[in-house]
Length: 145
Length: 110
Image (cartoon, rainbow over all chains, first blue to last red; front, top):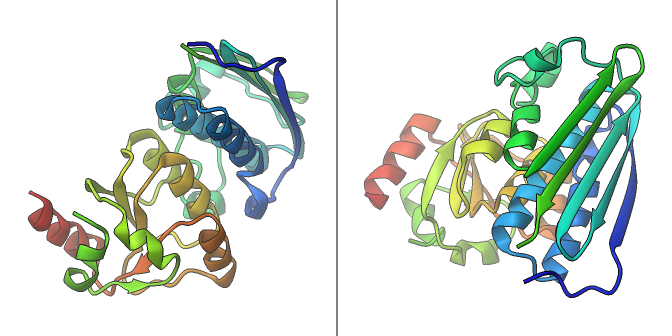
């Protein structure tokens, strides 16, 4: 049952590093679009969580970043590009429990080393690229049945 | 069981969105790590935590939690109250510890 939409729905967001209070803007927007379209609840939950984790990573680690989403009849695509420090060892970063977050971020309950694993777990396709000193980019796809 | 059924047992002070007390509760998840909650809690559970900052509203909303219980008498900040009201999230405060709150809920639900 593909989504009944005439053309893909897009969303674009700027995310500023350190702005914890506005976190969740992009993911909430995506969520409300998916609710409007009548997407299955479990997929909405996965897409919202993965997108929120992606936003948080930009806020915690980068100076700024861009998040965009695309809703097509058969899949949801979420792309994030940040101007952050980059990740030296991607395998290590994908390990649950590994984090380079500072203590004050951990005090807020973030930086437990579960963000990237959560994004991967909630995606059907997950791609991450990173260049130290330049930034990190992530692409996630959730298929719509 | 409804959220409302917990109010007396856990001495809950309801801080936001009272309509949510009609929400069905299936269990509880106790954690102060936000990604752990998003990764491992289940829709319909109540989240027991000491975190009181703004991000708890989005975590609970995205995860489909029935409500949030702040332990040890902790209070949500004013900005959190406003956001929770607009996002229709029920936040409650209990004087109990996480251990006591979860223990009482376990007895009620099992």
